[in-house]
Image (cartoon, rainbow, N blue to C red; front, side, top):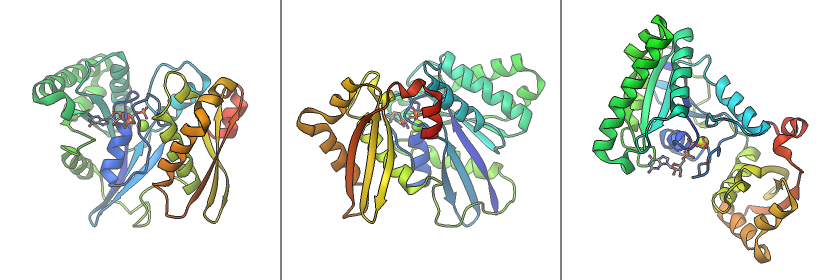
Length: 301
Ligand SMILES: Nc1nc2c(ncn2[C@@H]2O[C@H](COP(=O)(O)OP(=O)(O)OP(=O)(O)O)[C@@H](O)[C@H]2O)c(=O)[nH]1
Ligand SMILES: [Mg+2]
């Protein structure tokens, strides 16, 4: 049996969480079209008779504007170390920018130091089409080679062994080849999680995330970033989720006219929970929480 850890890294919105869900075949982490959706490291476990791979989803690396942003980057950065493979993800739909280069550079550095594999996933091939995808694959190879040359011999050895995968995390195309490569690069080892366990996320945290996911798809501009959700009560089938925003004006938007938004959010989140679950949603203001260290500590960021 082979076993090990593989971290998925990349800038926000490239499709890291979508990939994790596709690999484990279940929704273990939320996704959205808004940047910085993922706020914690989330593990998804793939168990097969011959292998167990723990895939780690991470917050997108970005230039932080708030203390929350700094914490998200810290969380992502700490997931680079002590793994067997780094899956650096970029998009086939957009040119490789400074954010992607930073991710690739950091991946090369860590892999050179720690001896792990580097696999580059070029995602969203379903939108990009074959020509654009082919161009992006060769561009990715060029950028990785160039960065490795800047970083030195150890990084160049990593780059020589790096592999590039065109994938669609959404449709699943190309994902099995990527997973097989990760498995083949793992060493013999024990299973880290019991069979049947597919995520390390606590049930309450997952419910809070499902509510936040629904809010993300119904809000825009700076509001998605200003929302934090937490379960404050769970008794039998009754779950109370508190939604925190930064300002009074945001509270009104989240609730919606006549409570409409909140109602939609509750219905859509509940549809993903066991039948009979009663979700009680409650909105509260926690002034400027994204910038307050003590609140971030309390919220577990
Ligand atoms: N067309 C297409 N869209 C995709 C694909 N994978 C992800 N997306 C979309 O890209 C957006 C971002 O996906 P996420 O999986 O949330 O991205 P992420 O990298 O986890 O983002 P952060 O958590 O913010 O760092 C969502 O709207 C997804 O539906 C894909 O293979 N093809
Ligand atoms: Mg994500």
